[in-house]
Length: 234
Image (cartoon, rainbow, N blue to C red):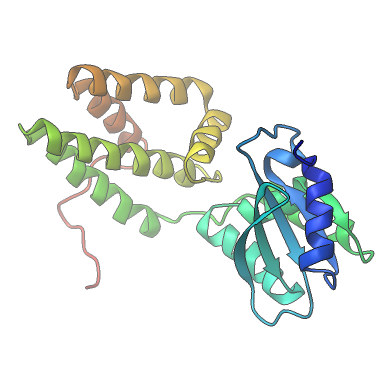
């Protein structure tokens, strides 16, 4: 029988990072949502490590992802999360189960929670412009191409970057994959459900009009489509 996730994580630490100072078991294990296919995500603070790294293991029949930092690189990771708008590491620390503690684990969690509460760095108009231009260009492609296969690739790209634009332009965190959906749902449930609905319409029927119309409404709140006058360094 497979070893329980928390016990496997503790045994992994003793076996692989016995000298570490602090460790958090994060992800689905911390949320008590583990399945047989889940990974064990562990954030490890180890002052013996000069460089931060991510390393994958298979131990005790579990896939384990170790995110290893020292105090300086962990602080840098928090700040990079704020700049990039993706709170993966702060969230893992804030919500994680403490597996090992040198006395600073709660303080680290408090700092992580503060980062999450404060949100990502704000997008200026200058930062929004490249995304508005890219979305405008993709909308033109979506509405003008007759090749259904090409339109599908355009629509997938639009679906991803428009979600990012909506969240970042409104000062909210983004994420990858399922976390983008969760972030959009947390920001505006009605918009999220409508956005998924119009994308499904396109996939099922090839009709891009509802998707295009909704994206145009998003852009209107931030100055509309952008082409004429747009300039960027090369």
